[in-house]
Image 1 (cartoon, rainbow, N blue to C red):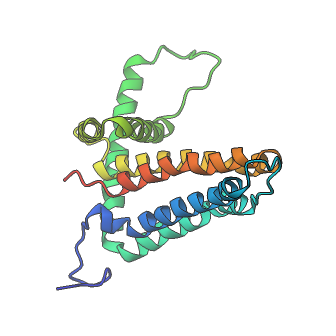
Image 2 (image 1 turned 135 degrees about the vertical axis):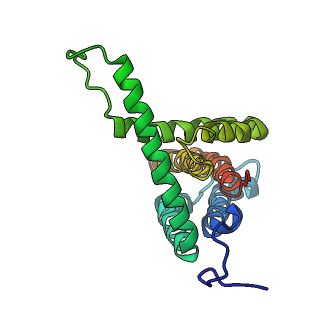
Length: 224
């Protein structure tokens, strides 16, 4: 029996591929747009006669995809949250518990290692800042490892979540964010490159694609 996302019988914990379906679709569309924009640069070059020294190419599509990329991704995230409100409630509650556990652990460690009243000229992160940074760091580490060793990265996620200071979903979501940001950073250089070197602009569009594909894999990964 098929249920709508807001139905009382809809699952509280949908598969991640369903939970992040709009984001995955938006990333897939963005991958196609990046390739199509690069094709508008490479296509005319490939079609030009061998003896033609100068080839006119169009970089508008490269610039357009670079400038517009963040908006549909943000919109897709919001739509996914609206489609699965029960899952959002569950995730938020789990994240709050994990955050509290991280803060408590960081506070205990800080108390043990605190050198005394004078802690040096550099202001150290607060417990709350440290807890937030820990999640970002975990996401970065998982995203980096997932590219070359998905099984090892999956094991790392479970290891990171075993103590209760992090949850599987929030580590994977942080890894998605890390991959998406890397792709957007590549696209962020397109506009400058397009003014002087169309080929570089096209290459940057294509350089962003593996990151977005990586984000799709992480968004759909279910680790039980």
